[in-house]
Length: 313
Image (cartoon, rainbow, N blue to C red; front, side, top):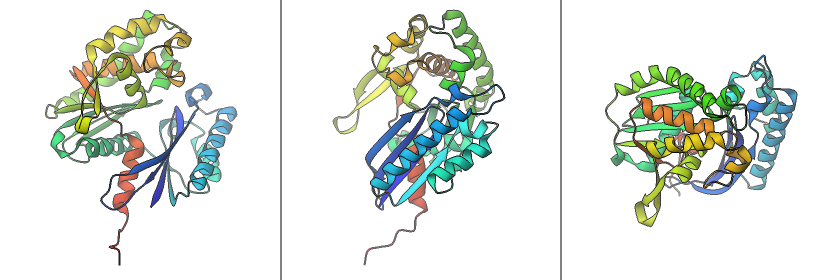
């Protein structure tokens, strides 16, 4: 069976197509991304501008066309914080649903964290024990902790890379003073999360699962041997912290020349680094491991479980 997951996030509209079977690992066949950076289109009243809505609807229509061309049997469409929190969100959702020809599932922050945690748990397996998860999107940062498939603690805070870039680092380059203001803001918002998560058992694995974290790991981390000859990426807090002053001093146009920093991440990577470093500090994390699976895979896995598979005749 071929399924599609359409993730309408704050930074991108991302379609993942995968072939699935009972008891098997999902096999991705197609991945299509349209970079939007919706935070650029936010009006002072918190609404998404008409230009932004049209760009969003166009991207959704393109993804639907790809899904149809790929013979997707079921398209699972979700939207996260940018659409969820916009003051004209109801109108935006209606227009997305018209472009899709189906209903859209709008996820709350904790639901995002739970779906992502499920994907990470499946990737690492039960033997990974207690997992602490960080996931940085365009609009929010999700943190989750637990030893089962669903986390015991899940929290979402408005510290996404796009949101914090617009609010705290609008200049290019932003400079050290702006970085310190953002760091203080992040520290304040993370304090109650750190208190709740700190009451959980010490994690056996600390994991980061977003594109921003993968980019930062390629910049400041290092590979180690994984299963079956594969590589795992680890990101030390100290190395990440040492890169932040340098990232804040160079313009966005020069950042894409750095390892792991793609053109669509150049503006937001400084904020992502500051938020992640502050979160790792608040939760006393020295190093994290990068997961290739995240929200889209979690949505896919949960849907597969909900199906009533029948034994072949």
